[in-house]
Amino acid sequence: MIAALWISLFIVAYTFVGYGFLLYFIIKIKRAFKGKPQLPDVAPEDLPTCTLVVAAYNEEHFIAEKIKNSLGLQYPAGKLKFVFVTDGSSDNTPDVIAQYPQIQLLHKPERAGKIAAVHRAMEYVDTEVVVFTDANTFLNPEAMIRICRHYSDRTVGSVAGEKRVHMNSNADASAAGEGFYWKYESTLKKWDSELYSVVGAAGELFSVRRDLYQDVPSDTVLDDFMISMLIAEQGYRIIYEPDAYAVETASENVSEELKRKIRIAAGGIQSILRLKSLLFSFKYPVLSFQYVSHRVLRWTVTPFFLILAFVLNLLMVIEGTNWFYIAMFAAQVLFYCLALLGFVMEKRQIRIKALFIPYYFCVMNYAVLAGIIRYFTKKQSSVWEKAQRKM
Image 1 (tube, helix red, strand yellow):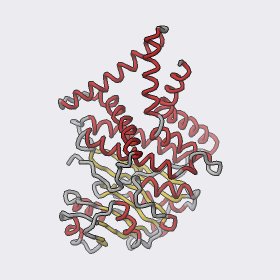
Image 2 (tube, helix red, strand yellow):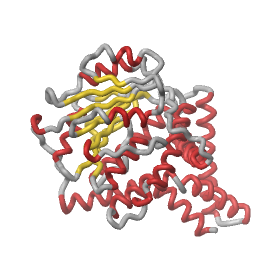
Image 3 (cartoon, helix red, strand yellow):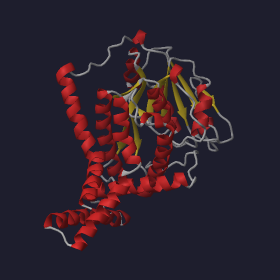
Image 4 (cartoon, one colour):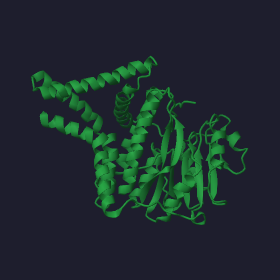
């Protein structure tokens, strides 16, 4: 029982904290021998041709601002194209886009889901690089240059930008928790990229070489993750570029964030089953190590080990044990009580920032459990159900 408890705690700690520490020390050792990597210096005329693809579904509240943001991006004249696809939109989104001749609008009244829209848009892409971004995110002006300069390295097959969550001083648990999570994720991605490769890209902002792009199955839930990982599976690296970033508002509330997280968790299980070759890859051992440590553990066993650690510790206390394990159990109870208190305070709209992290941590792990159940009970649709965002 003691061994099982410590194994459970080790896996949980490694997943959320230990991998970050290990990665940090590996990077320090690598820098001692090879120095800090230098950013590519590419002349404007040497940047690749590029297409910005935006899949928008009923985004009339954001689309005009998105267009203004997109057309204001810095890039050499004649090298940047824009494709917006609005299949299934029943509001004024297509009408707004149609007012801009610089943008190629693709619209069908039928809604087949985001990935079907992306597949259709890719038929019109004839540039060297394609950049994907969401309709409700806004890029910094230099984003395209910062991303595309990395393609001067032929080992690079995909470049992921940074996601930033906009928060104000009155941020609730969904905003503060999501913001903290993405800051931590960004740090891990920087180190992953420096070690070898980022493990998948987020749809807010990422790019791929056009000639490496592969259509993913139409029922794919995490199309952005799968598109980028299929390129990694071919032996190309995914680079992280924090100086190219997409800003979006947080989910409207924790319920909306939970809806999004459950979908991601269901898609994570689907992705793991479809990327079995990367679990224990002798061909790409570093990528396999990063993939299992950063993604697979979070999306599979870690929530179960959290439950197991609590139950085993409880049994040890009931059977009578030394003070150390009693204190350990008390610490677990205190953590979950803080999470529960965070839930109660959130429902009453009382903002106590100290409670946001334990609450969000529990929400995130519950979402993994719910996502696993949803995937295996075949209740997860590939058609994206948008989480409501703060306006």
